[in-house]
Length: 344
Ligand code: HEM
Image 1 (spheres, rainbow, N blue to C red):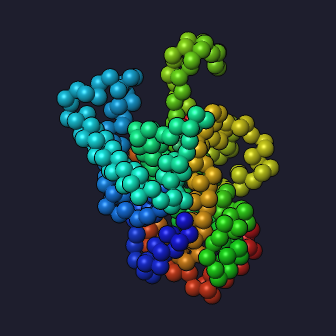
Image 2 (image 1 turned 90 degrees about the vertical axis):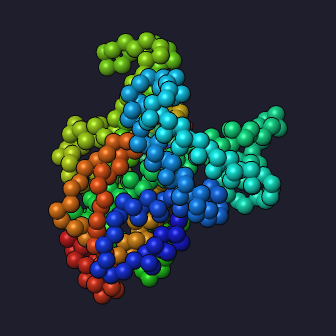
Image 3 (image 1 turned 60 degrees about the vertical axis):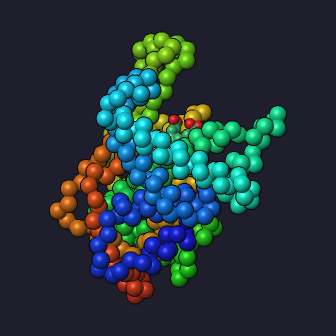
C-alpha cells in the first residue's frame, strides 16, 4: 500500500493540479489488484475498471425493480449494455484464474489462497465460485475506499485547521521515513480524520436486508420476505447522534465519544453477519495512504468548483475534485506543525 502510494507521490509536481478522485480511484484499484493477483496486469485492471463503470451506470435502474434478475435478458439498451459489460468482466477474471491454475505457483496473494482453499470434505472451489469470490472482493474493495479517500481529501482541504493538525501528527510519527505497519496504531488523529470523512460521506450510503421471519421494528410488523434499506448517509448526519452534524470534526471519534453513542449511529461498514469483510484492510489502506501523501504534499482546494454526491452503489463525487499540490518542505512543515500543535 505504502509503496504504490509513494510511487504516486513521487510523480506529482509542485504547483500542478490533480483530480483527487481520479488519483484515488487508480491508487486503490492498483492496491486491491496487487493484493488479489500479486502481479500488475495493467490492461486487465483497466478493462475491469471500465466494465465496472458501465455496470454502475445502470445500477439505479436495476435497484428500482425488486427481483431485477428476472428482467436482465430483456432487449432494452441499458440491459444489453449491462450484459455485455458483465460478459467482459467474467472473461477477464476467468482468464486470470485459468492462467494461474496452469502455472500452479503459490504467489501468496488472495487468489492463491482461494485456489488452495479446501472444504472439510477436501473439495476445492469451483471455477464459477472462484470467479464470484474474486469479482466480489475486487469490486467491493476499491470504489469504496477510493470514494472515502476522495471525500476525506476534500474535507481536509476545505478545513485547514484539521488539515494542519493531521499534518502535525504525520510529521511527528513518520519523521523522515516512509510509513510502516507499526505506524498505523500511532496515527490516531489521521484515523479519526478518515472516520469522520466516512461519517459525512459514507461510501456505502445505504444497504439492504430482507426479513426471513416476521420482525417488529419501530412499531411496524414486517412479514417474511420484506425488503428494506437502512441509510448510513441519513443516520450519520442525524443531529440526535452527531450535534451540528455537517461540521467536519474528527474528535467525534475518540474512544470516549464512541462509547457514548449507539453502536448503529455510525456504521460505514454495515453490521451483523454480513458486515464488510474488508474493514480492517480499508482502515489500514485509508490511514497509510493519507499519511503517505500528506507527508509529501499539501492539497489546496481550487475554489469555484461544483461539489455534489452521485449516489450509485457507492457515494461518488459527481464532479472531478481539482486540487493544487504544494510540496511540503521540511522547514515549511516544521513551522506549520508548531502552529498546529499550539492551536490544538
Ligand atoms: C472504506 C471502504 C469500505 C467500505 C465503506 C465498505 C462497506 C461495506 C458495507 C457497508 C458492506 C455491507 C455490510 C452489511 O451488509 O452489513 C460491505 C460488504 C463487503 N465488503 Fe466492504 N467496504 C469497504 C472496503 C472493502 C474492501 C477493501 C474489501 C475487500 C478487500 C471489501 C469487501 C467486502 C465484501 C466481500 C463484502 C460482502 C460481505 C458479505 O456479504 O459477507 N470491502 N462493505
